[in-house]
Image (cartoon, chains in turn yellow, cyan):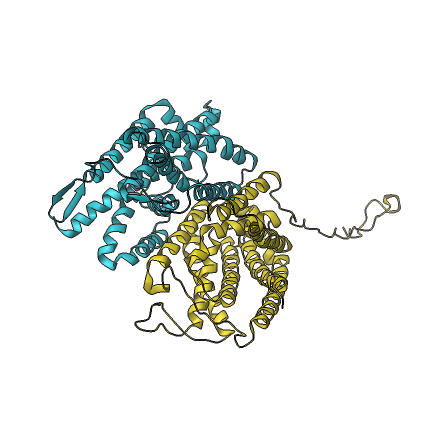
Length: 335
Length: 299
């Protein structure tokens, strides 16, 4: 496989993984209205959990120290990662999501992500600190390099298709409608008797599971994960994907993943290297932030807006000619 | 002085710096009704402005650069608040948009700082004599620590007087309490909001500079690292209460230092979050219950 095909396959894999994460974030942010600006924390939990499930226990006296080391094979390591992230999402749900007002929740989640990153970097024994997890062997490890990439592309694309289908059914279902109603008018929905916390909690945990799935797939593909992979700017990139692609719409999330996460991040590699080595990534992040502001000002619904609900009109009752009827009629009015 | 007491004093010193920042954040939050994620980067902006004035490329005298940096941060906060945030909050008043706007602005500010100055760690030298140590048993306090504490107390006192006695302060409290009613009473809310951006920008400047000197070295993530502790302090201290913000910051400062003694340095971050989570479960409205007839209450 030539260099161009290899590049295209790599892009394709990242697109699939990014789309899965975007779909999860869309469920939380776009459909349920949970302002989780620290989604990357959930991705990181999934990545670390999958890594810890895959590698052997840390050798004593070695240069890597971390917890766990379960040496599970595929797909158990990935499922372990998803499960751990879902449990983490549950913990966050019963504490922060339940008790805090929306803006305090946003603050707390951002603080948690920042603090979590600092903790993961500083504590060597937890997850190997700044170096992070390395040598995570993915599935298909026995295949040649180019076959590994193709196989992984098939795997991630397959997972994306399944996730997209499930998300589509979920958001079109009464559950999805209830979530959107909670997003738009929480007081009204709870006045109608729905348990708004349970709805948001479910959306949060499902979104967390998808984040774990995305993180796990990333670590299985790239073979490693360290604190630099989950800077707050990553959350901003996900945010841009949803805001640009289409808030609340699954196709929009996938489009956003393509345009922002793959498109924008790859476009910067084609620019000439100007200034310091850090100028271009910083410029790229700045442009992502500006794009979000521009879209929020002019087109907050994104490129693919949410579909308006169409309700079939009720069957209109048959028309009676008033002149035919006697004045006092006992015929029941079918309307 | 025993080790625990000395550590507690260090915690109070750091907490005092954090409290200046938390107070500014809380005032902004009260008046504008939006949490401003760009407050963290604002602290870093202050630090870099002082660096530019004092170290490179200008070489102004230390105290002059500090004062100019505070003024510059205040003006910068006013510009961002008045010309970016206020139009956005008016056009897209939903909470989701407001928070996303401030978050994106924070990201933009951070990336501008990294783009211009890179993510290198730089040094900011305090003037000579600042690091003279006063020893009292296990306690070793520098002049800088003592001055930071005194500065914090000054800021709190001035803010208390301002909020309680001046007309603008009372207007700000009125706006925090009920913006619509304030407008009905004839208060010019746009002007009050502008003044708020200016004053809290100055507070961010003071806090950022104090933190920069406290740490001796700084990088573009300095403000963000302070911001997450600030958030913990504000949630701890309670919704909308300036006194709560101060108390919360002091407690977070104490916990951050004392936890090093209890669980070791690497886990001190975790201990802050454990305390926070327990607090969210037990008292989600914060530790301080706002009294309705106090000088300080804005909620």
